[in-house]
Image 1: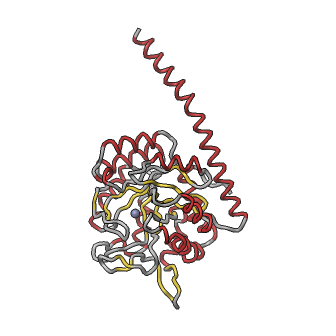
Image 2: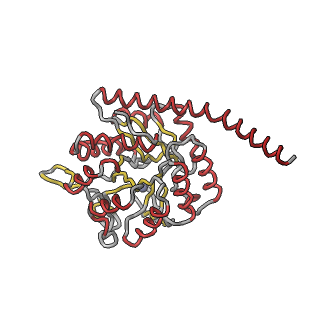
Length: 337
Ligand SMILES: [Zn+2]
C-alpha cells in the first residue's frame, strides 16, 4: 500500500512539474529571443550594446527614467537587482512588463536582513534562485566600507553561513552572483577559501581596478593581482570599477580607481590594465553600480566605460566586455556570431 501511495505521489509531482515548467520556459525563451534581436539591431546600427550587470534598483527611481538613460547610452539590457524592501519579485514584475530592457535578477544582499543572516531572507532567496525564473543574482556584500551614498561599515565574512548559501545556490544552478568585498590583504583568505570550496559557483567580484587604502590593500594595487586570481580561479569574473576617474575615497583621501592615468588633460587606461583585459577578454563585465543617489551620474559612468576603456581595446575584446560575457553568464550560452 505504501509503495502505491509513494508511486502515486511521484507521478503527481512529475505531472505538476511538466505542467508548470514549459509555460515558464517558453516565456523565458521568448524574452531571450527578443533581447538577442535587440542587441543585434543595435550592432546593425553601429552601436556597441552594453549589458549592465550591476544596477541597484529602489522604488525612488522612476522606471521610465531608467529606460530613458539606457536608450540614450546604448545600454541594451540591465540586470535589475532590487533592494530588500522591494524583493526579487519586483525585478521579475518589471522584467515581465519591460522584457526588452530588464533581466529578472534577485534581490541584492545589502540590507539588514542579509547582514544579519536572516533565515527567512535566505530561504526566500533559495526559492527564487531555484524557481528558474531569475537569470542572475544581485550583489552580496561581504566587507563593505561606508560609501558616498550609504553608511554601511560592515563585514559579513565571505565564508559566513549566509554567503555559503549564495555560493551553494550558484554552484547548484549555474546562476551568477555579484560579490562586494573590499580587497584588504587580511580579507583575501576568506574569499580564496570559498573560491576553492565552490569551483562551480559563478562569482563576479565587483569594482575591480579599485584601491581604497594602499596600506591595507597591498596586493590589489595593480593589475598583477587580478591576473594571478584569474589564473588561479577559473570560476571568477570581475565587473569594472565605476568610480569617476580621479574621484577620491573620502576616508583615506586616496584616488579610488587605479586603472586610469591623466595625460595631456586626457584620461587614459593604464597599459597594464589594457594588457590584462586583452589577455583575459572573457572574464570582465560592465556594471554601472548606479543606485538612487548616483542616478544623475549614469551618462558619465557609461561614457567613461566607452571612451576610456572599450574604445582603447580590440573590437573583439570590447564586444566581450560590453555584452558577450554577460550574455553568456545570464543564458549559459555563448553569443552566436
Ligand atoms: Zn558594490
